[in-house]
Length: 239
Ligand SMILES: C[S@@+](CC[C@H](N)C(=O)[O-])C[C@H]1O[C@@H](n2cnc3c(N)ncnc32)[C@H](O)[C@@H]1O
Image (cartoon, rainbow, N blue to C red; front, side):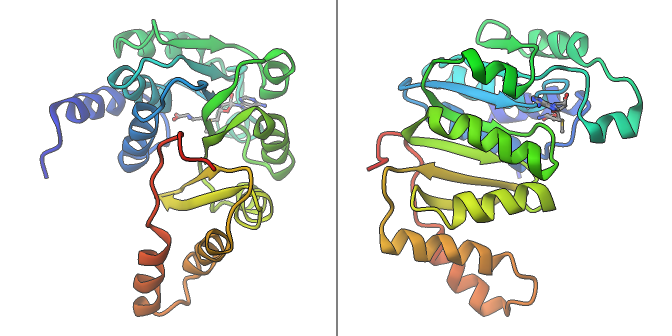
């Protein structure tokens, strides 16, 4: 199916960038970044060669031009080193970001999430977490950055159904009193931070766990999805 010329152009750009993000996930990041109102900045943990950064940057440019802080030490996570040995992704990252014309909006921080969080004082309206996927690292990313996300802001986790991220999102997002409008788009779990969610929010959030079960009959899954997927993601409605 034909997309908008802008989405088609980004797809062509990211096709040439080495990475794991799928187009549906990229389009989600684009929409989330475009929706940002400028009440905080956009943060990405784990940029690698810039595939997800390009979607975020182009989405932000189509919206209010909110800065995208792209945090990555660029020397690879444990998983990447296991696959490729020594890693240095920053040169390719810079080249890809410039080719996509988002270099004026993207601020690279060549640091770990932990190093960057220590001195990062800006409020965060949208954060995309795709760094090291081991449980203790995802947990640390959550603990470091959740307090910096504004009420009404969005947290998105890549590979959320992989064991490490899943334990974090299950315990600290889905079962939490501080999130609503939780949904999966491909492997990304998105959730909106609120000061206190409602009973209905909590029931919907729990449905997210049930809907991931592969043993659920199709009819129940369809009914559950209708219940869960009734939210909007403007950061102004955090309650
Ligand atoms: C799966 S890749 C990210 C892929 C990227 N989002 C994309 O769309 O192609 C994971 C990245 O996380 C980075 N990383 C590993 N540990 C990190 C940490 N503690 N803080 C920030 N980034 C980290 C690695 O260097 C690697 O580039």
